[in-house]
Image 1: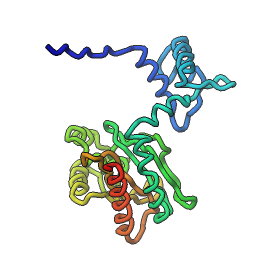
Image 2: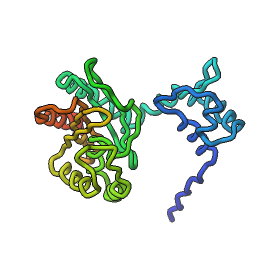
Image 3: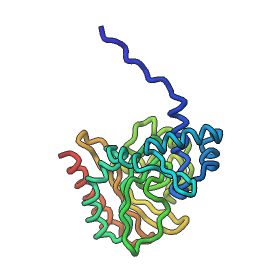
Image 4: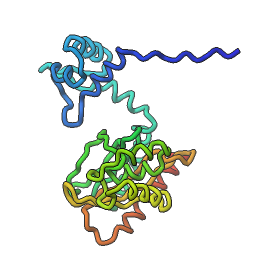
Length: 252
């Protein structure tokens, strides 16, 4: 008789530790204890105890001025994530080739729940300004790469995205849930997406899916270029070719 699998209980300590780690952001990579406690919604003494433990484990590091930042040990663990640095390692050579062709931004994005997570970007010196740093999370409907990942997401994820759709944060041509639904269908039909946004500046993008050995979409490779380009078709072809090359490398 097979023994039932014991479900791991929810750990208050783990949840509080992750609350501390989640207090950091790309704009705030070093935080004093007081801000850390405030953002984690924890008492100062609890935050101090957790911070000391996390420093001892290498998950946090403490500077001479008393501020805390993410420790190198977490980077070592993150390197083992197949959808993060493992995927990045395979994709980088092909992204570098695409960078030489486009001379703008080349990005690699994965989906986590209802968010798109930027895991890598290569940028030319003359590239236009960027909105997000590596590691940034955005709603799936806020970027072309996110919409592409949404198109291949489970139906429940798509329906939730349609329910909370915000027309002010994505492609200028998608202003209603019905238009978003049609765009998802067109992405699945065409195998890529081209998009344009005017705010905070005029820019265009092309994204295509990266598939694993099971043919499941695990990432999106994309470019961000100045808006108003007369013909995006050469970019469409280049991005799709890059996505197929990364997919083949993942499947071998």
